[in-house]
Image 1 (tube, rainbow, N blue to C red):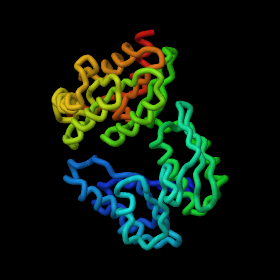
Image 2: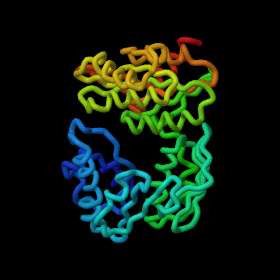
Image 3: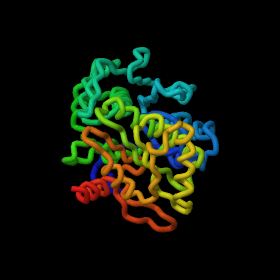
Image 4: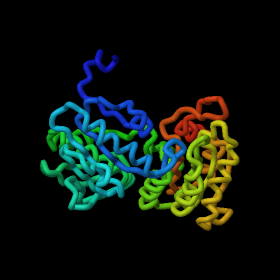
Length: 331
């Protein structure tokens, strides 16, 4: 109703696997469907990866296929193992994108990624598109290419696309920088799955001049199998790991932390290289206290969220504000 009142002409919707499985998006007259990736998540609901995949595939096989729009476009990530499979049997025009594989319809070249952002050239069927973005990391380059593919498929000019990319500023909770005078890099990120954490840490690790410190936890009443996996991912990439609470919900937060620790131990991280601090603010505070000039801190898992669910209580908690408070406390 509000969009109609505001005369909105274009809408971008994130299609959750739950909504697709429950057929809440059926009969939506969409113009374009985009697949970015499929990694372990929501298995508390889907039970296994095949069921998760089948739910995601409905975006193409049911929602896009059932749309009455003309010139529909399916966009898929050529770099993802499920990228080709998910669009099999789709009659609509399909565009594949890739970070650097020239066999894809859209790919990037002359890639330069730094702590200042991303610079590259996207090669597309409609010509080259200049990428100058404040976003950080290879995973965000992939997201930019997905957006370019969607826009190209919808008939948007390369010039307009380039302007749109340049105008996009930092997304709240997605490698969002926290300014400080301590000479360290602090980023807030929503990464809450093994693959997302791997992408974020891997992207930042290559840019680090000092140590990489990660603060993260796992949600309660959700997929328990990913906890140890995320512990291993963090231990494999970061120099220092601080495990804390995310949204424990009805579970004992210390039990969740111990589940994560199993993966850390499997990775062989020494006891002095990781800490377990249940209180999320105290964990963030410690990360800043132990940091040195040029170190990088990633506070992962909650991103843009401004709450923390403990038991049946939804308490106000904002990672960015917690970092700012900690910086003031030690100033």
